[in-house]
Length: 463
Image 1: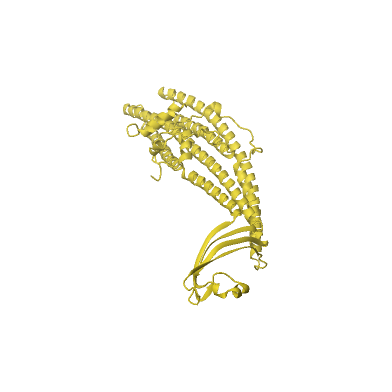
Image 2: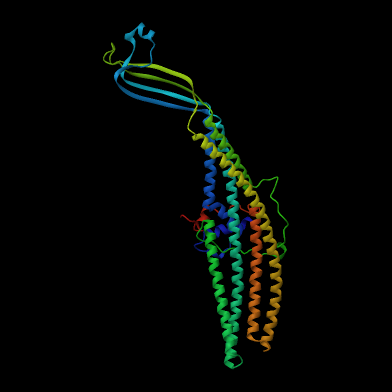
C-alpha cells in the first residue's frame, strides 16, 4: 500500500463527522502501529527505560563526591572563641582574641569516598545492567503487544468469516423453510419436515448470535490493547493455500541472542554485582573530607571591643576510616541472602532456556497441525459441497428426504467452519512463532501514519 492510502485514511478519520470511519477499513499492521503508539503499558515501559538511564547517570556521579554549602547559628551562655586557639596565641595577646556568645558559621564541605569496599563500583555496574534490562524488557513488551494485537485481529477476522458463512447458511435454511411451508400447504410435505427445518434454522440463528457476541468480546479486547474506544472495520486477511505450509524444527538463535535470554543473563550478572556490593560491608570505608569557611560573631560584653563584629577563617582536610568489626551477624545474613538470590536467578535462567526450547517446539507443532487441519478441512469442504449439491437435486426430484438435505447442509457448514478456523489458526500459530523468535516487529510494517488529530477520532482512553 502506498502513502496515498494512509493519507486518505487520516483524512477520513479527521473528517469523521461527515464520513463515518467505519466505512474505511483499517489493516492489521495499522492496528499494530496504533497500539505501539498508544498503549499505556508501552509508555510505562519507555518511562522505565528513562528512569534506569537517570539512575545510571546518578550512580556514575557519586564517584565525584559531594560539595555542600553549610551554615549555622548558635547562641552560648558562656563566651566562645571564633576558632580553636593554641596556648601560645592566647599568651601573646589575650585581649585580641575575639569572643562571642552568638557564633555564626558559613562555609563549604567537600567529601569524596576513596574506598568503599567496591560498593560504589558495584552499584554503577548494577544500574548499568538495570538500564540494559529495561531496554530489553521494552523490546519484549513491544513483541508481546504485537503478538496480542495480531492474534486478536486474526480471531476477529476468523469470526467475521464464520459469521458470513453462517449467515449464508441461515439464509439458505430460511428459504428452505419457506419452500417446505408452501409445499405443506399444497399437501406435498409432511408437518414433520417443517418442524425439522425450523429446528435447524433456530440452531443456526443461535450459532450466528454466539459468533457475533464472541466477536464483540474480542473487539473490546482489541480496543484495550490499542487504547481506543472505537475503530474502523478491520480489513480482512484471507489465508491463501500457497502461504499455509509446514515449517521445520526451530532452534533458538546462537549468534543473535534473544532479548528474553539476554534479560535472564543480565539478571544473573546484576545479582552477582549485588552480592559484591553486599560484601563491601566487610571492608573498611575511607573518606576524604575537607572544609573551608568563616566563623564570625559580635564580641561579648567582657571584650575590650565589645559589640564589634569579628571573623575568623577556618579550614581543614583529612581522611576518615571506618571499619565495622562486629555487627552480630547482620552483614553475614545479608550476604547469605544475596548468595541465595544469585543462585535463584541462575535456576531461573536455566528454566527460561528450557521453556523457550519447548515453546519453539510447541509452536512448530501447532503450525504443522494447523496445516494438516487446513488441508483436511479443505478436502472435507469440497466433498460436502458436492454432497449438498447432489442432495439438493435429489430433494427437488423427491428422491431424498428433508432430513437428508438438512444433514448435508449442516455437514457442509461444519466443514466450512473448520476450514476457516484452521486457516486463521495457522496465522495465529505463525504469529506465536514470530513472538518467540522476537521477529514480530521485524515482520510488521509498524511505521506510524497517524497524526495526533487523527488518533483523537479513534476515541482514545483517558480522554
